[in-house]
Every structure is written in structure tokens, then in C-alpha cells.
Amino acid sequence: QVQLTESGGGLVQPGGSLRLSCAASGFTLDYYAIGWFRQAPGKEREGVSCISSSDGSTYYADSVKGRFTVSRDKAKNTVYLQMNSLKPEDAAVYYCATVYGPSCGLGIDEYDYWGQGTQVTVSS
Image 1 (cartoon, helix red, strand yellow):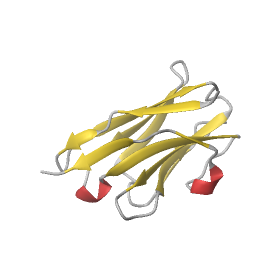
Image 2 (cartoon, rainbow, N blue to C red; image 1 turned 90 degrees about the vertical axis):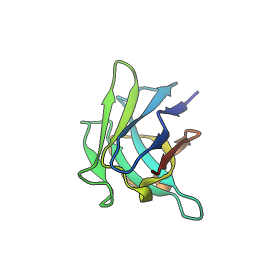
Image 3 (cartoon, one colour; image 1 turned 45 degrees about the horizontal axis):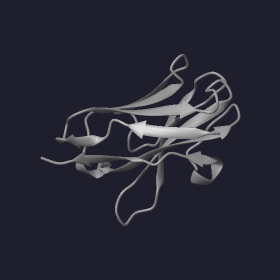
């Protein structure tokens, strides 16, 4: 059974950092790509970043490029999203999602399985 569990969210001041984790079970990162998404109140869910299964290639939305870094630990079957220089507009519920296949993208419809989300609040 494919399951994803996010953790690491919380309250942080503008300019601060957080690291989100996405623990995968029921499948291996060798064959499944992982995407990170976020949804703020009143807004549509949007793609933030993803990491491919084939070679670990990473992709980022323009809004987070240079501030966020996605990585994976295959031994722990976990993907991370390091978020630096956080801004109030980064506040949202963050979700990880997965799809079988070698490549990844930032489209919501590309993914089959989703975690429950973790809240990130950026406020002074």
C-alpha cells in the first residue's frame, strides 16, 4: 500500500528555514518520483518542486528557485524539502505526492498518491 507521510512543518519567522520530510512506505524511490506541492487558503494547489526516480533530477517553481532544495535519502526512503529565506507568501499546507515512473513534473494531475499535508506558517 502506497503511503506518504509529511512532517516538519511549523511556525517560522520571515527569513527563517524549515526542512520538510516526506516518508514513503509501500514503494521505493528507485521507481517513483516525488513532487512537493502547496496550497494556501483560497488559492489553488501549486507545484513547488520535484525529484525524479531515475537520476534524482530536480525541478523548481520559479517562486522558490534558489531558496528551496529537494533531496532524497534512498536508505530511509524519504524525500526532503529544505526551505530557506522563507517569505510570508510561502505559508501554506505542503503536500508530497508520488507517481510511478522515471521523471517528474510540477503538474497536480501527474501524481497518483498524496500525503495528508503539513502546515507551514511564516509570520513575525
